[in-house]
Amino acid sequence: GHWNTTDVDVLAGGQDAGGRKLPSNAWMALRRLGWTVSCEAKVNDRIVRMAQEQAGRALRSVKWRADLVAGVLAFWPDDPKKRTGEEWDAVRAAIPGGEYLPSSVIRSRTRQITGFERNHGRRPLDVFELEPTPRVPRMLLLAACDGQQATIESSQLEPTKALLRLQLPTRPSPQTYRDWTWVECSITLPPTVAANAMIHLPTLRIAGGKVRADLAHTHPVPKIQRTGHTVALGVDWGLNTLLSAGAARLHDEGQITDVGAGAQFRAAGVLAKQYRLRRISERLHAKTDHYDRLADPSLDGRAARLAEEIRRVSARRSNLNDALAWSAARWTVDQAVAAGATVIYLEDLRSMEAGGMGRTQNTRLSQTVRGQITDHVRHLAAEVGIAVVTVPPRNTSKHCPACLTPLRHRKAPDRPTVPGWKWAICPGCGWQGDRDQGAWRRIAARGLAHQTKTVVDRTSGAMVIHAVVDAMEAKSVITATPKTHRTDRSKTGPTRPRTNRLTPGRREVPSPTRPLGRAGQRPEGHAPTDRTRLPRAAHRHQGVTTISTHTTSRHRPRGAALGAGFHLHAHASPPRWAQPTPDHTVRIGSLS
Image: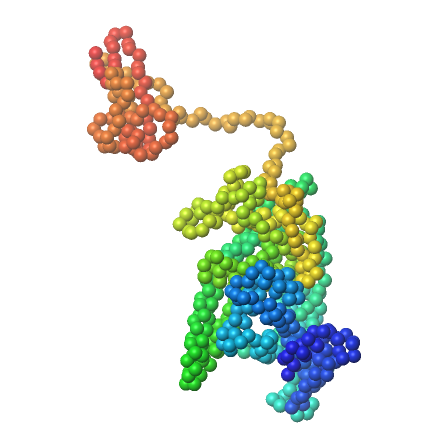
């Protein structure tokens, strides 16, 4: 009943008719404004509070979307597909906080308004005409209740159990308070809930035919520091390799070294399933639009079934994105804990919008869950006292992490047939590696060098480094880890091992001569004296026995090229000419 601009502005204004400040609880604010409800059944007043709390939260959350749509409508561009620089400045000035708003959000709202105009022949007046009344999920916000409706306490005997007691009706339409009774529900606490945590009343909802409890709990955590970090985890965003992370250490001398080789979080399978669901959703929307253009009443049943199928596909996509975001965030925080890092540095990609890479690639990049991952990383990192800071992404994949020289990108040497330019080579210092592995080194080094420039954003409350300082950027290089040497290198024993001398690889003396009348038979064959160079072999199985000439060039294993010696990979020693005896003259290869 209050889904309109006037009532939403009054609720968001924060003051009632008498000028008093509205309470933070939504149900108390609605009652202060006199927005009451009527119930046909006999229910406790706490049940009414839960309904008012849910409605108040929905009305408060629409205020931001209303201001956004109003700013876009107030400065509508001449070409909705492409705004000029002046039009961008005007629309950002009309939106509260528009200077920090990503361009993709404004463009998506522009496309939504353009679709409404195409269907209705005019532009909408506000967001309440552009969007339908939100559907109310089936859930119980027990946080709006007190001990007269619900209580919860941890089990003293089993630390992993909690007992929830709440009043529930015994019939579908209770008429008196006698139709209500107390019910005890045992809740199994997940392992993420600490033993000393204080649990609060949960939110009950139905999922998959079961009642799920979204349990909130509080427990003390270490205080997060903005500066003074020595070990940091750098995280780089990717597409198929969604995250690449590694740790870097800041030494007392000011040098920064990497800790380990880093790791990668690959989500190619999940992203492929996400891509298939997107294609299915596009086909279903195309069929629905076709039925709308036909305007045939006999197709209403099919259109309704398509609408239900679209809702199910959208729910699957949403659940898949949420599961992927939590899994990636949990992996990132676990990497930081394992490396002993006190800060996580992320690229600030809020304003990144894919373009110029083809329709398919642009859609895949635009639908990644980077924003959700960042929020979940902050949530999980705060639990263990690790700071999360966003740094400027400029030139993180372009410059060398060791000398800041522009890199040359090539195909990976281990996968030369895979398209892309994943491998980076530095022409200055010779560093080479995966470009994502070099990017997280650059991010971690930049964060450690600029940690004195870390500030807390007033709008979001997140820690961020806004700009890169050239003097600090020159120090954000990853140096080689210093090698450790023995302090005492005095000689305490023999330097050469006491082993028998190995047999020489080739014969060092000539072959013995035979009795008179026959020349000495050498293992490498006959060598005529009138030749200055031995003949080359035509093939390995030739009739004469020859060897290859001695060479100092690189080893060539082919037997035909080497002269077909004893073996395909064996090389005989060169011939040694024997000295003549006093009684007769002997020449190798001839007799005189």
